[in-house]
Length: 156
Image (cartoon, rainbow, N blue to C red; front, side, top):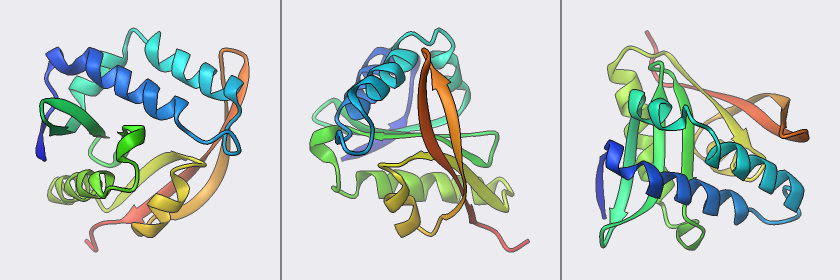
């Protein structure tokens, strides 16, 4: 597996990965309507490419295919972390998250924050994140809940 920074030419493949990961979330976690609203918000977001490229976005690549991605923004926010459905539980997300945490710590971040889907909460808890509170968002008229989480990465 190769880990590299995202380039503008990766945008379409990254967005496809994000949509596939969202649609692959089990139906007992989010309904089909919630997943479609969320995936639609990702695929229709005209600012997403800039947001990914302006952040510190890392890609996990195998055989020239992007299998996972993660973004650090503002030096202390894990903005995105998606893994292709066939690579779930393969440690790819953990590797990317660890790299982002090290980058954030090197930039002076004390705490990292993220808004985790219900599907991702166990992953973040396993990696030392604490739940702060649940949040509600409306995407395309559909209510979707997630969890604000944080982790201390520096003792300064």
